[in-house]
Length: 393
Image (cartoon, rainbow, N blue to C red; front, side, top):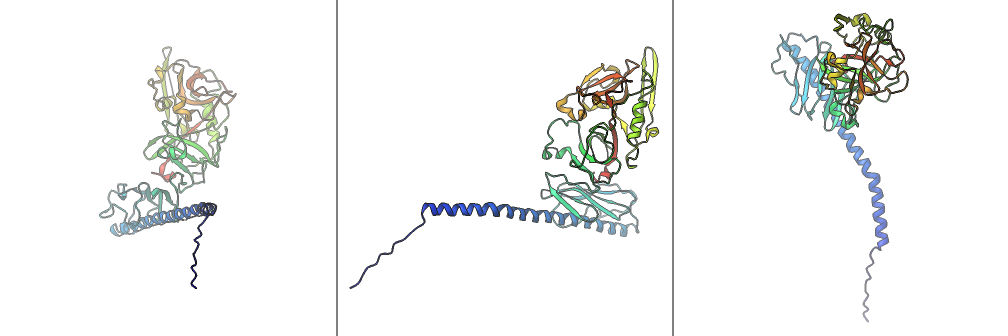
């Protein structure tokens, strides 16, 4: 007798399917970030390799340059600006043969921005802010380092520079109109490592890592003001109710606070004020060489220019000029209504009262105030730094 057997097909239950899906999801949650990290590290390593390759091409440039020029090489900095079309020579090398040397020859991904510099008579090659595949890369003369484009990679000398183009990616969105860059540097040593984490904005701090606002870019130099007063409250001129002698007391305190600052800081140019009050002519000139040549006071004219005030001429200013806090909050950093921290002095006298001078006040204004007051306003330094000393172009 022949028996017929029926095969019974058994599938997965709904609970079993859900269990499998949950297990797969857990595996994906664990594995995907690891895979992405591996891929990101590979991309970052490739960007660092490209940076090193660009640096090597600059070293080759030096060799070829010296072959063409009988062993000679410029004393100053030779700079290449990098774009998506390559890294091209931007320095004018008068008297040298630069045929077929206008561009660095390298393989790999071309950076969309950044600079390559050759210094020390061709012995040192550095690269700054090379944007390669979404990474910002530097080369310090020995090795390459890259960080995400949202990060700020330290310049090769240790200072940190955040340019206005990078503000948004660093969460800097309001109150910084007129600022070209935020710079973290140690004024006593421009080569010291300095960043937001180790900076100190406490009133009276005049050494170590400090935060600065660059508001002027001229001759490949940044002019910048500190984000805090480096002295306590001082008089503008303590000896008498008289602004015709200039801010002698404030300048003496500036000199004390900047003793030991780096000699690479660019010496300030003299400031002259001339005016007529009650038919009497007055003038004074601040020769900053007498006060150490390391830093200076901001002028009321500069504040007016920064804040786009229509009456930038001191002769036309009233005793109080409002500063738009929403736009220029950085000019009012770390000052408040509390006693002895209400603002900082400028180098400028009031032209309408021989006992008054201009200062930036906590209320959000530029105002003239009595020069002998010693319990309200401090000294906030302005310095000028060569971009080459910050390893930026």
